[in-house]
Image (cartoon, rainbow, N blue to C red; front, side, top):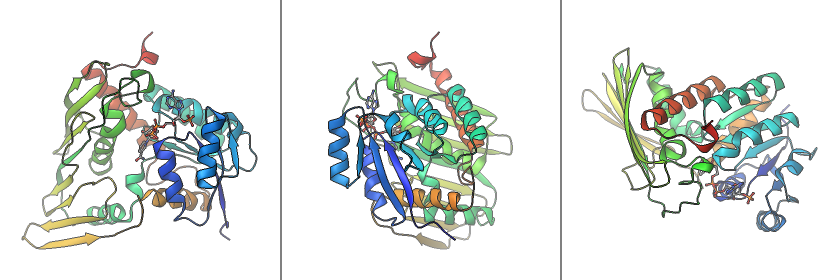
Length: 330
Ligand SMILES: NC(=O)c1ccc[n+]([C@@H]2O[C@H](COP(=O)([O-])OP(=O)(O)OC[C@H]3O[C@@H](n4cnc5c(N)ncnc54)[C@H](OP(=O)(O)O)[C@@H]3O)[C@@H](O)[C@H]2O)c1
């Protein structure tokens, strides 16, 4: 018998936490029972706006609330490891926003905790949960594109420059790669696996983080991925999977897709469509419930081993650019 409700607690009251609350509206079985913030007044404002009954002036109080079953970590990257480990220690399941942690060393520590806790833990790679993305995966696995030889994807946007914001501040894990480049890198990982060689370059800005980056991954099976990301300029925000029998184009914004164009080698075209309401985070929330219903401790769509590989790839890319966070310096 499926549970009627799943009780969530949220850590942080920023932009993505607000979008999460809007998505909860589309998932009747999700109930957000508590929110934690660094300050009581922000917890209260968030809680009263979204009708959350318990509003705490600390993240720990959410973790200690016995009613909370699943914790949604919506804090800056630099806090993800600590927040997730503390949630696991409190016996909670965790959906942690991407990137899972600042680097692979932290990710390995969290995954070790996760595996011994017996709790469900997933990195919030919401792109993989969209029905249209599941359909693209199905088409590729069914061989409709033939052998994939090229994956192209980009994600660049232009926020105002603010050296104190989590996007530019190295203390908070700033930089294009960890914030948005992670999506193209995860797409290449999903469809082509682990590259044997990565060539890349980045424009490092005045705060010492990558503001524009470009990457070429080379795969021994005979494929390439051409990826880019930016927090300085807008980019087309498209993804293309190119195979010997056809290509699939995911138009902007490809990471939350509602449509795709499949063009076969004979020139025939198919328009794939799956529209949805709101922003689409509801698919990830439902997926977490489905995993819990099945008694899983990991998402089959974003396994912890993939999260570890993703973090290792991003560490290696940052090493190529000389971008290190203060927490990583001895
Ligand atoms: N899946 C997605 O599409 C998506 C989109 C955006 C972001 N994200 C991820 O979600 C995480 C949060 O991003 P966001 O855009 O929501 O960030 P944000 O608007 O800056 O909010 C982050 C929240 O974290 C808390 N926080 C704790 N320590 C902080 C500190 N030292 N400085 C600033 N905030 C601090 C704050 O909440 P309190 O003041 O209430 O404690 C703040 O509101 C990031 O890891 C990001 O990669 C995912």
